[in-house]
Image (cartoon, rainbow, N blue to C red; front, side, top):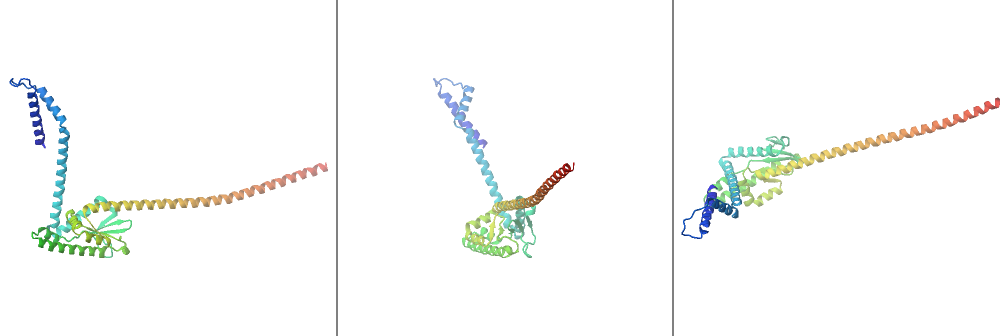
Length: 303
């Protein structure tokens, strides 16, 4: 990057000096270069060429290249770790799976190495609004490793076929063990492949196989795609919780309305009694007034 800037500056400076020299009316006379004019010419040329923008663009591109290089290195380390030996592969996959779950979900939404389906114990599960989603991370990679290492094309194809058969067998096992809606699971489960390299090989070379088992309830996922699915599951759970709360509020409002109607009915009955009592009181008062008038009338006759 520094070399690019310096090179550009040298070119501009040379051009500025050349420009000033050519402006002299008498070429044979010794040239005295005015530093201020040189600086002004360099500055003008720098601005005209928009070198600030170009250098900034180059720096940004270099940063992007470095970022992509780091990603490639990470993927390379992933695949090396994955292919090292069966025990390390298993531990690597489980650690990566647990890290993803912890990063995307609250702790009460998932579990690891727990009995979920009868006596079956998946590597992890997610508690979704539709039931438990089981996740298996035991992925067959021995044939994939041999396929990667093979130099002969025929040998590569032989191990590719073995890898395909091993993947199909694994997906069938996951379907058999962990897709049990009648026992509280969802109608699908995840097969977790900890390496993006292996995952995209499958997507590219074994798409039909993946599609077939997706229809049967087994979804093959990578760290990236599982992360997206976990966010969707979390959003669905939150939506279900909000819906449940809304139903609770609706039920409470209905209860309040019923209670209000009961009170209103009681008040109506009470008011009816009060109104009747008032009518009777008015009748009694009228009768008393009549009796009083009659009594006074009798008294006047006696006198």
